[in-house]
Length: 406
View (tube, rainbow, N blue to C red):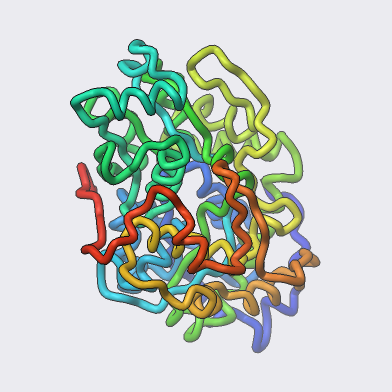
């Protein structure tokens, strides 16, 4: 895939050489692991004197535990996973680091064919179903503190459905979502691709909403590690960023590159799914299972001239506001202080500038979400308290029980 490499030789030799020549990096079987897999397998890391040993993980909980313990040097990570570990939610606190963003957009909320056959195919119908039926629907997400829990909760709340009171929420690892939907253990899920497309292609339900309709160009997966790794091996961390940046840029250079990436991801050692389940939504071509087809202008993105990869402070702060909103945090953290420690802006800047990738002058960005609220990082305490539906009372944190962790 990568025929020409223009790697600055200064990064290979001398004091800038990586302290480690081989690292173990975890990933989940998801389309948005693409840039990490391309970097490891298509010649982007080796010119920097680095070998990336990819290790697929069975669940986000497993990946988190291995990342925090140091068994993995770095990983394709959920933003929420990194910040929960930093704050000690769901386990002992560990100083963590976000090296760069891996992608934006590209997740989906799917409902079952049973609900489809009952006519529950709109947000309004779902609202009626949750409030008028005597039985609660069960929705799956991938980690109690993860992005998909936050997207699911945010979307449900924007439609008037309280995600902690009106429905049940359970944890299912991404590759098991379709199986659980087929077995009718769950009524819907929020997960990364290709599993939303896979459910549609198998006629097991439909896509009711994409994550980009919740927040266009939202933060999604990141390249995460412990702060200890960055401090012990700063050159290794920097060249890892550079290799993944080059791979991210490569994927978006052409549609052919996206197609070849989809073909590679379909392999049994990576996502292990039919290429047709991966390729369409990777190209932005959506079919929702209800007869609607469209070209999504906010489909999964990996680079966009560095906009995707910037470790925005406001992105990290947003996940903490949602932890606070839903009772995962009993008090407001130092939002900006924590984000400034976790987001490795100086390291990212050095790596990006060496590749002539523009780094924005500010580390805060402004976005409008589905409920009309604007998030810009300026008032995280007020933002966390501004929602009609929340769980802000001083109660024990609410964490969903897993259906299957491994």
